[in-house]
Length: 79
Image 1 (cartoon, rainbow, N blue to C red):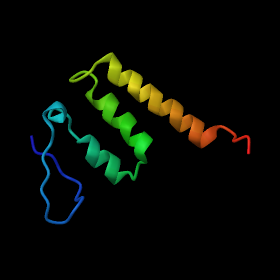
Image 2 (tube, helix red, strand yellow; image 1 turned 45 degrees about the vertical axis):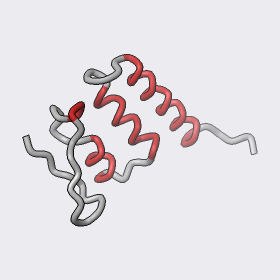
Image 3 (cartoon, rainbow, N blue to C red; image 1 turned 90 degrees about the horizontal axis):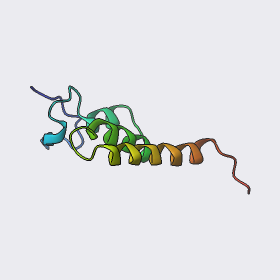
Image 4 (cartoon, helix red, strand yellow; image 1 turned 90 degrees about the vertical axis):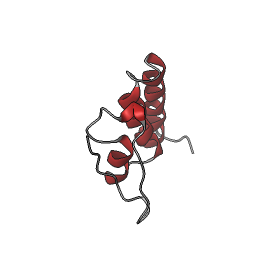
């Protein structure tokens, strides 16, 4: 299976990590192509790999990133 890589740096070839090899779109490609921020990108990364790597731990990390994202994006600052 051939993966299309997002051109992070012109002329630099990157390779897919084995834990993502069964995915049609590599998480880094999706993250970069959609201009996601750090927390959004981590959610994609952890959810994409949970079955192949750390199971429940990765899903809990994704939940933590989502909770932080909600806090930063939607909760009112007491300032």
